[in-house]
Length: 362
Image 1 (cartoon, rainbow, N blue to C red):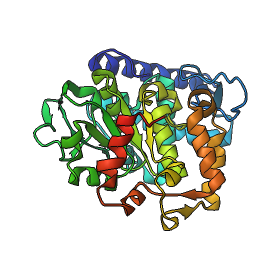
Image 2: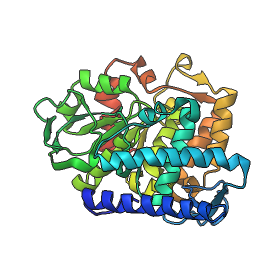
Image 3: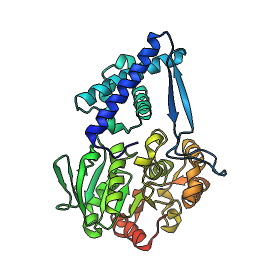
Image 4: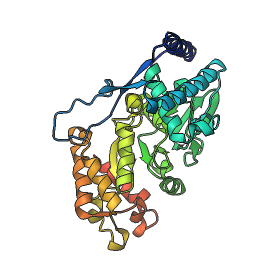
């Protein structure tokens, strides 16, 4: 829903849509009628892997109907309109705010952060825009290092002068320009601890690459920035995550998007991302000692079984699904750091370079 128009034109269009939306509600109430609000519902996957599904990033699979006649909807609509008023103010004043900022403007009414998050997602769908278009931004959690230089809002980020030094991923990705890089590939790592291991071992110097981490589940700026780099630089992108259900879920978030923001998945997903590791089959290939392997918990098994039903695994990456099945079959998991059992630098000197050079990724 991001679009290609200029920022000022987009703000004007959004403010017009907000006025038209609120005016229609007021007119309906003034005439003694209960307004009906239709919200499209999106998904980036279904749970029928054996069928020929029709999941689409562009089309909704149905509509949710909200009305003031239903008591359960009144509070949700009240929250939606309050958040919409705050968004309108941000746009009019050309200011930015976080979801947390919005929550603390009416904490007694909002009660918890999740209701604000839902309202923002609903507004994005109603206004047919992305979250950053509302001037609602994340604080930013991602880190980047390597052979890249760019500008963000006039501020210069020159990672090339010190390729192994961490820089924050830019929050206002739409303001990033003049991207320059001599990197050969992009490496996405799940955790900051692995990112720091790569930095300490001077990985970017030895391999001429760009390394990005979302420090767990990636936030929107990290995913948007990664997508921008892949589009502009046309570089292969590899993802390294823990061999556990949560690492796999993070991997799929980068490649396919998240269900919560499925309405914007086509602007956040990176279908070019390849899975570099750690594979469940790596435990045997690299002969990891039994002490490095942890048993899957009941929660791990339920999450794995649920993920196996996602249609895009069977449709787009059946080899990913086979590895996930192997994890469930063996009933064990392990962290990326388990590879340090051989040497502290085994990950950076042997595992990653040999996989990329040998094309051992899926």
